[in-house]
Length: 470
Image 1 (cartoon, rainbow, N blue to C red):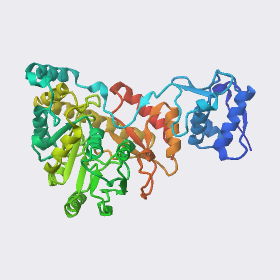
Image 2: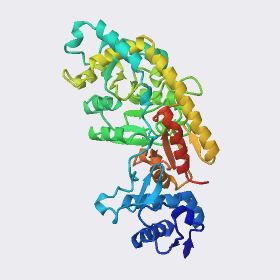
Image 3: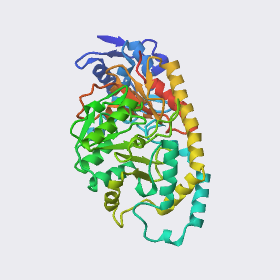
C-alpha cells in the first residue's frame, strides 16, 4: 500500500511518497520507508521531519508508531533529535555501526535527557544550605575532643537521641537511643542485616519494588518471594513459610497507597504467630498531602518490626545518613556486623544532622518541601486533566512520584516516546518482581520532585506530548 504525506512541502521541503509494505506491521514498514528515503537521498541531510503527531495524522497511523520509528532511526544514526530543532536527517553519510546502537530496553537520547522525571530524588536545588551550614558550624564548635577519635559503631549518641524524639513525634515510632543503629542508607541497612548474618532468607517482598534492593539481597544469598498487591497494599494473606517480610507500608513503592489498617494489624499477627519479623522501609513517610501522615507499623509492636529510614528523600541523597530502629534482640548482632572499623557515616555529618533536627530546621525544611511537592503534584494532575484526561495518576496522596496508568500494551512505546522527547523516566514494568504471578499493568513512574522549579513546567509539557492517545 502506498501512503503519502499531504501538504508536506512546508514541513520537510518537498513532496515525499512512502510505500508502507512488507512484514512486521506499520512500525517496521515506516522504519524501512524512512531509512530508504534517507539512503536514496530523497531526504537530504539536515532535512527536518514533521512532528510525529502530524505525520501520524497524515499517514493514518498511531502517534506511538511514528514515535517508535523515529526513536529507532535515531538509535541507528539515520536521524537526530534536539530540543528546539525537532527531528532531522543526520548529517553523517552512513548510519552508526551496529556495535554503537543503544539497546532497545534503554531508548536513546542523542544528547542526554533534557527533563529528569525519574523517581527517588528530591529537588536538589532546594537543599537548605544556609541552615545546614549553621548546624554544621554549631556542631563543630560544640563537639568534644573525643568526637575526632575512634567512634561508636552505633552512631553518635546526639543523633540517636534526636532521632528518638523526632521519630516518636513525627512517625509514631516507639524506641530509645540504645536501639537505634546509624547507617548510610537503606541499601546499607540491608547489607548489614542480611550480608552481615543478622537475618537470613527467604524474605517476602512486595511484587513491585526497587530492583536494586533485590540485587543487594541476592548478593547476600537471600531469595525473595513476591507478594501480590491490590488497592489495599500487599496481600498479607499470601505470606507463607517466610520468617520475614519487607514492606513499604506508608506509601507502597512504586504503585502508591498505604497498607490498609487491617493488613497492618494482620502482618503483626503473622509475625507474632511465626516468630517472624517485619522490615519497614519508611522511605518518604513525611510527605503526605491529603491527610495526616500514616504512622509507622513499628509502633504496633517494636519487638517485631525493624524500622528503617534515611534523609535521602527528605533532605538529600548526598547526605549519606540513615538509621535502623531495632528490636532489642538484634542490636548486638547489628553492631557486630558493622564492625569496629567499618566505613561508618561521617561523625561530623551525624552531629550536624542531630543539630539540624534539634534546632527545628529539619521540621521547617520538611514542611516547606511538603508544600512545594504538593504544588508539583497538583500541577501534574492539572496538566493531565487538560492535555491527557484519559490518563489517570495514582499514588498521589503522598510521596515524590506518581504512577500514570496507561492503556494496555502502550507502556513500552510511551517510554520510547518519552525518550524521544528528552525525558528520563521509568516504566512500571522496571519495578516488577520477575517471579510474581500478579497481573501486570501498564504505567509510567513519574518523579515530580526531581526537577528544579524553573524546569518543571517544560518537563510537564514534554511529558504530555509523549503520552499515548485515547
